[in-house]
Structure formats: structure tokens, C-alpha cells
Image 1 (cartoon, rainbow, N blue to C red):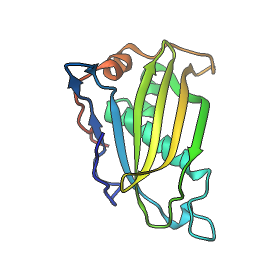
Image 2: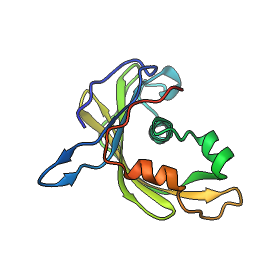
Image 3: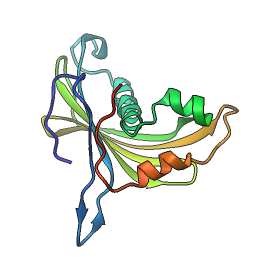
Length: 166
């Protein structure tokens, strides 16, 4: 998805899904603009490597919130949450203090109890980090649970979704 880089994390996140006649529905993707703050960097002003995982977590959380399923609602109403089962990250270029970044999250595959996601962190279109993440839906007991039906329907939808109120 082409998105404009916004330096303001308070701006609404964006969802995109496009149908193309020759390829069918495009994968659902979500973009989260964010800013690199002093707390995200090391002494040289470069983003510390573990903080890319935090940025990706924010992207996944805002993806769910944009669909109308914030974590607290899923826990309270469905008794489920998501845990990272597997994560692979390739660091391609550093981000620096005060950079405006975009975290793009794309649903690659929707399993019975898992979401396979590709997340890319960019600065002005330049790919900085590329992540493949598998999250598992789990119950309060920590055991796998099916992705709730309403969330499954929202994730499987090919229509564009607008931002939700916080």
C-alpha cells in the first residue's frame, strides 16, 4: 500500500484493500505512522534493534483496534489474546532519532488459531526492517483457541476499513 509518511502518531491509522480483476482481492494491509523518540535510540541516536519489535507490536495492536477488536475487548468478551509464536526479522537500514516511520502490517494467511503477518518498517518509502510474524490466538489458560468468528470475518473481508475511535 502506498502511504504518506506522517510524523504525527496521533493521526488515524489506515487500512487498504483493493480488488484487481486479474488477481482477485489484494491482501488486507494496515499502516501505522510513528515517530522515533529519544527513548527508542542508543547513545549514537540509532534505533536500538529490539525496538523494531516494539514498533511491530504497535502495528499489530493498531491493526486489531482499527478492525474494532482492541486487546482488552478480545480478552473481556472472547477470553482470548494473541501471543507471538514465531518472528523473523531482517534489518536492512537503521532508523534515527526523530525519523518519521510507517509500520505496514499485511495479513498473509488466516489459520484456525493463527495469523501469519508480514510487517515492514519504512522511512520515506525506504525499507528498514522486514518481519515475518506468526501470532497464535490463546485462551486465558495459554492454550490455543480458534480466532473468534467476528474477528475472522473482519480479517477475511476484502472491503476497505476505516479507522475506529480510540
